[in-house]
Amino acid sequence: MIAEMMDKLVMYFQYPFVQRAMVAGVLIALCSSLLGVTLVLKRFSFIGDGLSHVAFGALSLSAILNRIMLAVSGAAVQGILGVFVKNQMLLVMPVTMLVAWLLLGATKKSKIMGDASLAMLSVGSLGIGYLIMNKFSSGGNVSSDVCSTLFGSTSILTLSDFDLWMCVIMSVVVVAVFVLCYNKIFAVTFDADFATATGTRAGVYNTVIALVTAAVIVLAMNLVGSLLISGLVVFPALSAMRVFKSFKSVVISSAAISVLSAAVGIVASILLSTPVGSTIVVAQLIVFIVFSIIGIINSKGRKKV
View (cartoon, rainbow, N blue to C red):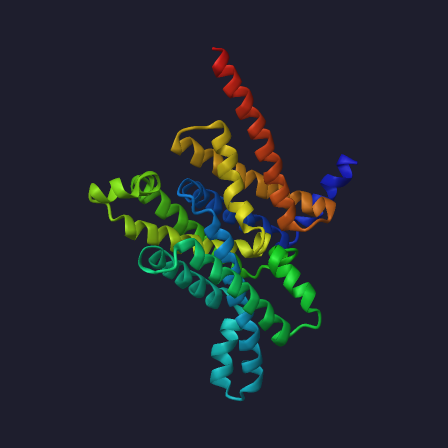
């Protein structure tokens, strides 16, 4: 039985699309875990879910662009629109990053509070996105297209070289931002007011965190879909916090948990023929339960001492 499973894995990993899925999955999981710690501690974990709905709406706009491209006759126009239709991230990522930036400004300047404006935008984008996809879908099975987008059932296995390179570039950017701005992010995460009082431009770093989060959310849609992104962002951070207490140890352990869960989830989905995204989230949920039990045991041990 084990030998057959190993042979199946070896066979599948000979295909380039599986190799791309594993590389992209690990990189996306790494970026999500780094940002997840900050978002959970700042109580912004809901942003991932809201921005994923915005990204879903932007993704649906590609259907309209596809119709326009087919309707126009100019080669130049078709060429420009064709780039956006073929590489959907070129449209989805800027739109999502713009909304993230607007939400950050709305938190302090708008009469509608940040959580309310996020709820309005996320639900509105989800509704508009489904309406657009229903009316302008190029495929015959709209329900299947929507399910694939919301839950990421097979999209990670159909990544193009462009998508993979986007994952690599954004992973380098996220890791670089986190390493270079580690002290500032640490200060802004725990006490933004104190950080501002000591000369740190908290607004700038909050904006950077929001924009990078939006970019990672768009990439993560290919891995787990729109509705499961919060699990990818929140579960590793919460799992690490059950056992570790310092910020640095939580960040490192969260990254390790996320990468391992993504790798195990992708492998398990291949062996069990299950959806990739939901398998990864279930793997992270199992890790969270295990770490919660370990945390309870450790706390009881400390009380006895």
